[in-house]
Image (tube, rainbow, N blue to C red; front, side):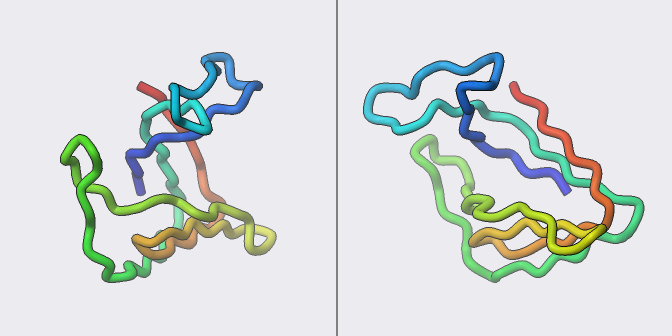
Amino acid sequence: MALRLDAVMTEEHPRYRPGERGEQYAYVTGWLTLSSDEPVEVELSGAPPTRDAAGETDLGQVDRFERVDQESWEAEGNWGRARLHRPVVSFVAD
C-alpha cells in the first residue's frame, strides 16, 4: 500500500525548515509505503475524493497510524482503514 502525502517535518528532521507564511508546519511531499508478507486488510470509507488547491485528487489524510497489538498496525483516515501485520514502513521524500 503506497500513499502520496505531505508529511509534517519536525525540528529533528535533517531537512527541517520553518513553515511557509500562514502555515503552522513545514511539509515534505513523498511516498509512505506500508507493506507486509501477509495480506493488507483494507476497508474503504466510500467517501468521494476531493480536489486540492493544485487540482489534484485528494483522498484525505492519514489521521492515525499506530500499533494495535503485538504484531499489527492500523492506518486510518477519511479514505478508510488499513490493518497490516508485521509491516515494513518506509517514507521516501521527493
